[in-house]
Image (cartoon, rainbow, N blue to C red):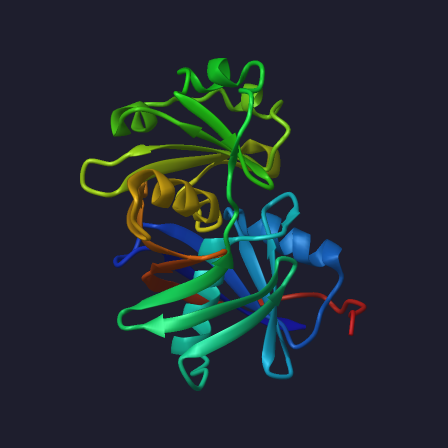
Length: 267
């Protein structure tokens, strides 16, 4: 079985920036164990797998160690590949996912994702988390799957040097750290050693928490965001009720083929 694979840099306007994702186009589903092995072999923060189902695209995301329920940058990259390489007609794509129906739309030179908002609530800071990060935050909140720690300044976030083994002890998908930005409305980083990603370069799904929080704090619904990882990435977030629209650019890095042995397929 031959599988077409693309790799693209999401939330970037030049190569080698943003967050790289692999996108695999499947004629039908194959065993999850093979999907996981492909994701581990790719060794990127996420590999997206796509199967066409009627008018929808069924989309799943895997880190090198597990399947996840939501991934922004790999969804953005998937939409880019479908629009620009598979010549998907129209300006909107509908995905069926573990997080429900998600949509991606062409918006001038960007692609915009329509995701459910995850409104974080204040919680007690978990024991040992400040020590694992190396600095105590001003506020601690939690969404459905992630903790969000708010710091006073951009420099506080940029200078963090976490102990990733210690971070693994936190019961969450990942840890978002954020602060007001100097040139952007807010900045952030995302640490996810629990799912095999010490630091994610740009995390679209984290902005389903970040956008509602900062929209309320700043008093504006359209927000510019910068993830201040080593690769870095820029996002435009718009809060509309219980939805967050997350827009960014994508650059294709490569196209290739995966040569799989004969395997029993899942139809």
